[in-house]
Length: 128
Image (cartoon, rainbow, N blue to C red; front, side, top):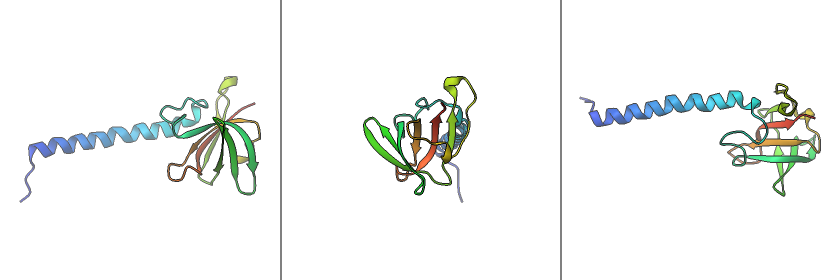
């Protein structure tokens, strides 16, 4: 016979609350990420992303090389990579973009995939 022990009940409730409250926050940031300007993404910018100008593009290999704090970082753009045009400096709404919008010299922020740090999860491209 399985009996519920009060001490375990509290732990289970606390774990359930953590799961319930943590998931919407993570999903919320994902769904609003495109509206956050380059370099200002809470908990991501400077920790899990590269910020700098595009110094090279390989359209055949679908890669972008960004200069981040003096280091060259080559990032692969996949079909799952989300790309946005950051138009916050011109006080216009950001919008979806694609790899074709990338040009050498543009300032970008690339959140790299946590699995390999070589693939882009998302990219924000500064609008001209």
